[in-house]
Amino acid sequence: MKLSKKVWLIVVIAIIVAALASLFTIYFRQAGERGELQDRLSRAETLLPNLVKQKKDLQDQLASATSLLNKNQAKFPESVESIEYGEDLFKIADDCNVELTSLRSSTPTGKKVGSVTYSVSSFVVIVEGNIDNMLKFIDAVGTGIDYDLFWSFQLPWSVDVNSINMEVAKSKATISLDIYGYKGT
Image (cartoon, rainbow, N blue to C red; front, top):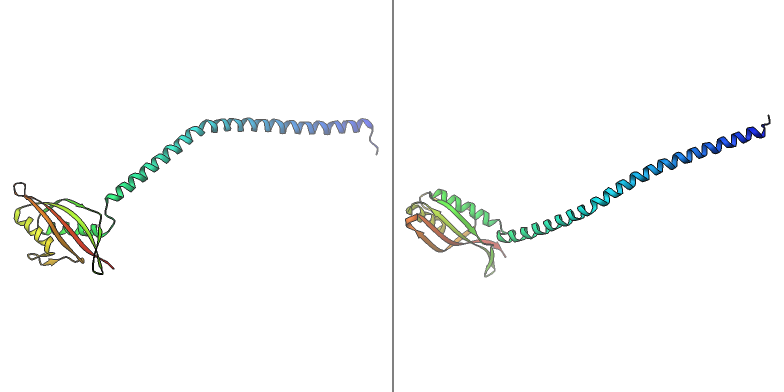
């Protein structure tokens, strides 16, 4: 069967129309996507300066917090022994019926005696109570023994009491002491 020129012309025109319709559909779809992408891009460009500023602010806050952390870490003793000593001092105060109202410690330092190195932590302790109990506390801390309760320090440390300031009228004593703990060689 032979097709006439008119049929071929109609088929070619139909193919061209279908191709053009497909191209227009694709073009308009891409034009819509391009418009949507341009809207998103303009919104992102609007948000970018705020995000950059927020990032800089957060970096500044991080730097400030890191600086504050380093500054505050320097205030606290690095050695765990200081915490253990503090716990023992509170226990001694409780056993001696005095109230330990303040406990300040310094960063431990090393002190070498011969081939042995000791960790030395300085403390300022403020206790309140009656005079007999405060004296009992001072004796217990200085000797490591409470003769009434028959206990002694369980940790390998000793105390050197540097000074005692008693305010009898206020029933308060401020005690400055150094605690020596074995650090190793």
